[in-house]
Length: 241
Image (cartoon, rainbow, N blue to C red; front, side):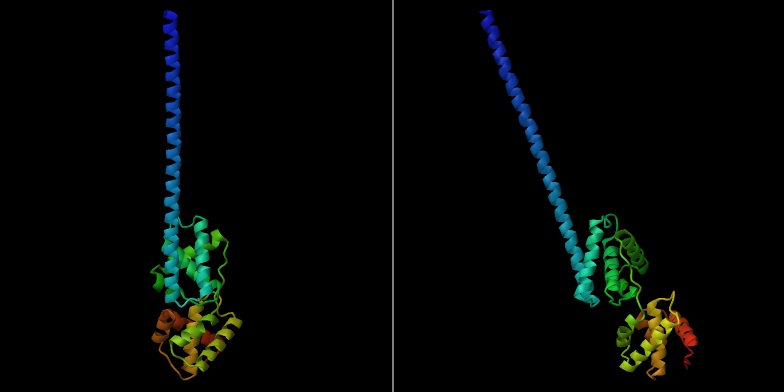
């Protein structure tokens, strides 16, 4: 009798052990399922955030391209630079606006689309110092080369802004070309050189513009304009009255 009772107790213990193991396995399975679900939700949220941020970036680049009359190829180039910055984790901890402004400026430089730092600054509300600093960061980290801009690239746009005739533009180009040949432009900003050549050409062609008008149209200061045009005129032997 006692033996049967003991055997019965042992069987009950075994059943309880099996049930306990089952509960542990179920609990472990639930934990794994919850963990997988949690990780999936995290990835989904991250993916959504990335998609949203890229959409914002695309929208901003489209806005800048429209505002600055940027060609399609250059617009695509700026987006490509931004994507590379994202993929190389250069966005984290930095202002997206600065990255976008620098991407646009670098794309313009790469595709020979003359847009001044002042124009990019006005369109993006990012200071020129921040744009330059971010450009250097992207160039170094992404292995991009900032192609120097020639003053010649600005002549046509600046003359159009000033409503100057074609012969004035041609004369300004001649002045810039001579300045380049004599290496007068070395170490000088291309917009200052272009503005000075246009100012001189307008005087020589009897289609004068004030220093203030030229400075405002080209985005250089009147001080820079005065210094540069006098320097160019002196070095090239041009008499400006």
